[in-house]
Image (cartoon, rainbow, N blue to C red):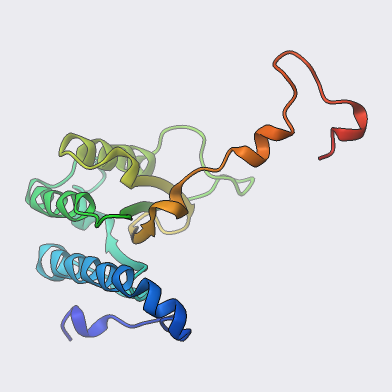
Length: 193
């Protein structure tokens, strides 16, 4: 089976025709981004799983960590540098009003008390090396986030999002209205708000 034949849709596209008509351009731009990501991974790296989670909005690619990094090392394989360059180019090519974002999540073993490790591990070093390599290659800094999740450390999950500018805009107005002036506290009746 080819990589493209393994893609499946987990969530159907919206069936609201009004919403579709107003967002048709965003959906098409998102699908074009997903096609670009598909082509990047089609031959560049061993892929365990690739799927379109939500057409035009979210896709997920799972790769073995040793396909991207040398075994037991946080050093990215030299042969994967063109892959990073292509991902950077795709993330940098957002359409007007849309952003392309990526999450890099690597599995990590948990401590005896079921928490993620608080000291540097191979997994945290790999996540750091990945984001530093992406930044050094020119990715928009706000487009890449990294993280750990409890799970298999030999697995890397990359999620690619298409988001509107409105979705990523922080909205501080609501929270700042309730804030007292610096150095003062809220009266006891308002503390729980």
